[in-house]
Each structure stands twice: as C-alpha cells, then as structure tokens.
Length: 431
Image 1 (tube, rainbow, N blue to C red):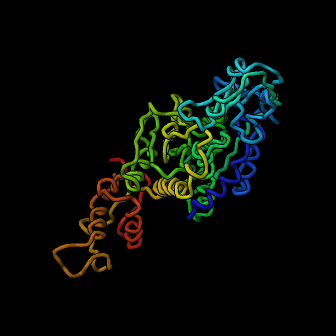
Image 2: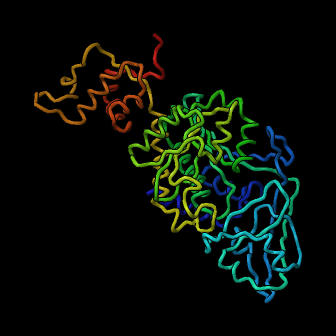
Image 3: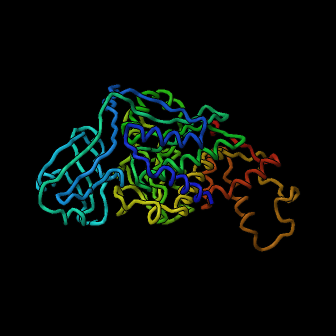
C-alpha cells in the first residue's frame, strides 16, 4: 500500500519548523528533492513586490520559552514548535502573569490542544499552550525569552516540471509552511511528492505536469507573479492539494467558475469512490485556490480532499497528528483519488465510431455469437459507449451518461481502438 510509504515520508518531515520563509522550508524541500531529484528550488528576495504584496523578511528562531515563578520551563519551542506564535519577534523580559496573559493563546473548548497561531505581517510575540496548562499558571513574575530574528532573506519554493507529448499542462500545487500538523500540511506535499514520482516513471504522457511546493498564500501569489502568462497560456487543468491524509471523509471544493474539466473530473472520481463525499462551494474557499482562481487569473484549479480544512476538530492544533488523524489508509485514499483524477485527464478524449451502424463485433470476438435473452454488463457498457461515440462527447461525458466510472471504459476503448473500430480525438470537430 503506497499509503505506508507516504506516511513514513511524512514522519521524516514532521519535526521540521516550517513557516512562510526560512530554513524549515528549505530543509523540507531538500528532503522532497531526495525523492524528486529534478525539483528546482527558487529563492525570491525579501522586499520583492508580488502583485499587491511584498515578500516579508525571513524569520529565524533558535529557542523560545517561559520560566514560571517556581523555575519551571514551559512553552518550550524546542519541545513543540507550535508553542511559539509564528513570526514572533525577539524578546527577553520579566513580567507579571496578568501581563503575560495578553500574549498567551489557548482553546477553552479543546483544553488539551496547543493552537497554531501566526502573525506574519504585524510585529508581535506570543506563546501557545493547552488551556489545561494555562489554567494552573501561578501568580508571580515570569521570564520570557525568544531568540528570533527578522532579516532580509528570501521566500523559497520548489517546482518540478514533467514534460509530456503536449505543451498543455496540469498544475498540482501544495503548500509547505505549516509546522507539526499532519492533515493540514504534511498530507499535501507528501501525497504530491508520490504523485510526481509515479508520473515521472510513466512511459507515455499525453500532457505535461507542473508540481509546485510553496508557502500558502504568499507563495502562490509569488509564483503567479512570476509565471502568470505561461500558466494562463498552458494550464488547462489542475488541483490544489491539501488535507488528503485522514480516513474520515472525501471532499470537493470547486474552482471559482465551477465548470472546468478539473471540476468535472473531481466530481466524477469522487462520486464513484465515495458517493457520500461532501461538496463545498466557492464560498467555502480557504487555501491557494483563492489565488489560482482569482479574477484575472482564472486558472482551472479545483480541490480534492479527504476532510476539508476547518471541518475537523483537530484543525490548526497539535491534535492534528500522524497517529489519530492522518493514517496510512487515509493517505492511500487521498493518493488514489488524485491519481484517478490525473488518469482521467490523461485518458479523456472524444471517441468517434469508425463505421456506420453498429460494428460487427462478433466476428472480432467482442460480442457473444450465441443470441440469448440477456447480455452481460460489460457488453452492455461497450454498446452504450459505441452509441454515444459520435465525436462530440468526451469519455467523461459518456461515463456520466452510462453512470459508470470512467476507468471501466478504458479497456473497452483500448479494445475498440485495437480493432480500428473507434477513433480517439482530442477535441470535437466543428459542425
């Protein structure tokens, strides 16, 4: 099961302190590059204008902690990097519990969880802890120490291009900026890495594939600012890969227009592997699809997920782990759904029958030669495929009409093509 290998890979990336910039992102990309040697890593300097945004200063943290009045070290960054508010500025101060409380974050409704909090674009400092721990903090003076730096550095992202027969591209984007959370972070880049590995070993690719590993939001904005013309010219389908590791559900979030080939393929695949999948609307957006589908960009990017971000209790907390939330089975399912979608894009075509009236299938060994009252399911599906193959409907269209998963049509198409009974076209001919 490929989910086991993906889960093991996620364990390697788990301890790394990632943010929107910094050495954690670079280390993550270096490890991904071990699996994908052709991965190109790009640095974009701090201060660079990217549309309406600007690349922030790079952030580095060595250590951070609080010493209680009784001398106990708590909120130790080195024991759990979620304890420190992301992008916290340096500080070395002693203050009272009441003053310290203004810089603490916890979740009363999840008293045993450490929340994930960031402050990328406003200078502040803070710590996160469980509410249980916060409630028993003693009165007195607390020593607060954060050894961090903000400096002119760069934002880092990775890109892998796999060339196919066509210049038309499928874009697969995932983010690498969240520390120590499994579904809402590691599942995306880990599944994407293994999708890329599989695509690279295929002998014949109809389309080209572009995999992008970026910090969320500022990363996709940066990438678009540098590549928008090429992407708009070449990308005809794609997926934002996030939250594909739990074993609880399947979910779909559409592109802004909701009627792209990515949307159609995503819904088709999920309807056959999990008919009860949850369908969201563009109003429920929250990841990099916001940038890829924004007005003026309008790339055909949809999202196939397991349980959607924000829709599970452990989201953005220390409880989003690699044991109870993300499992090998969950990752296997996320990989399978996305692979089926990619496969459907590769094999989608506009079939056209090459003879008038029904072809004589019996003499070719494709149809029973003994007439009986009933025909088999496979024969029925083949005859349905033939009747709808007029060159105006795609294979996905025909599968929908037949109420069958498109992958059930692949061997039929192959057999009919082998006998020169059907022509596979890239697009319908004009009237």
